Image (tube, rainbow, N blue to C red):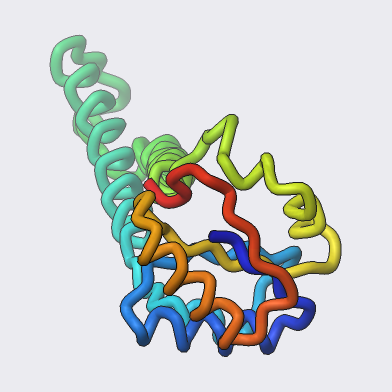
Length: 172
């Protein structure tokens, strides 16, 4: 079921109500909404953890490569030690940043289920307005007619302007 809301506050309040009632929901908005993350129970910390792990692994890997190369192929320059932190610092920092960025982007895409080239909601006639000025909320209904009727009634109670059945599974 896909519900259309005409105001951001209505979407946030409806999402909070439906989530509190135990429905699995997904929201779509043309811009970020204050309070929507709390209303849908979003508390995912996977991206910051992945960024930290990516930074540490990227920096450690490149430092190990540089140290290994200098130890395997020693070149005595002015009596300096073979493995020196100041000499490796710039490349280590850059690869740490690269690892953090790649891990963050990869985790964000994976957690958002992207890239998804087709979504059943794309078939809904008014869903293109989700990138313009309308707010949408989708409820997963697994083909059960009674559950679909309950979902439709719940969406109308939350102040939806329009409710349509898109006919396919919405949330993976």
